Image (cartoon, rainbow, N blue to C red; front, side, top):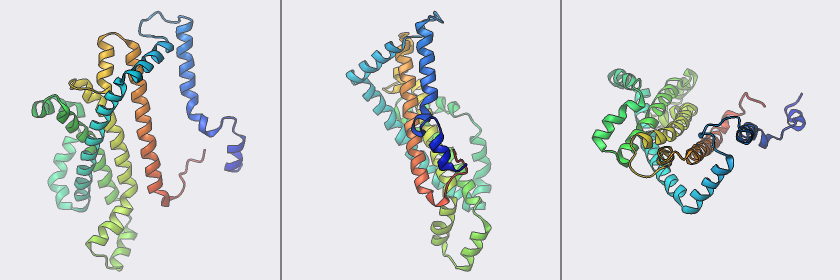
Length: 265
């Protein structure tokens, strides 16, 4: 069966398929509350969460919290990606750099990201500087590793062709190495965006000063307002989904020259 025939005969339209699981979860949640399947105070009604969402929008508290979290996220992401690209390119191009720095780098990458929190809090305090440094680390490692792997995976045939064409160093880097390694590099940047957002919430939980969506969830936990906690979880998931969607679209556009994916349906 042709791919177009499959899409035409599929019972669920393509743009609705991603909403099936959320709809099932929402219905299950409503049924659990409506029929009192659990008496736990942690299971709050859907309507209560909706009321909290409306209040957060009207009061402007959601805007303030999201602006603070996204500002830290994007600053840390930019610093981590910039440093990761520079380090990864040097790591991939220079055997000497790899031998000198490689053992230390591969040791540091094994350390849990959250193990850096006590040290960063001593160096930078509990404010935004420590959080941004933490997010930069979260974005740094995947960019370095994917850039290194991308450069070292450049096909030998392309290298031989560049030698025949007598590329200079600038041409080697910008016309051969970086274009050939771009799928891996962009994958690392995509991962860095996801990790930085996850680290944003972790930083706000562990370095509690200031505003942020993580701090909103902490407030809900301390006041035992589970509707506020669940609302925060939904917002975090929605923002993460949006960032991932934007990154995937940009990555797909930049790598359009590769053709279609093997995934057909």
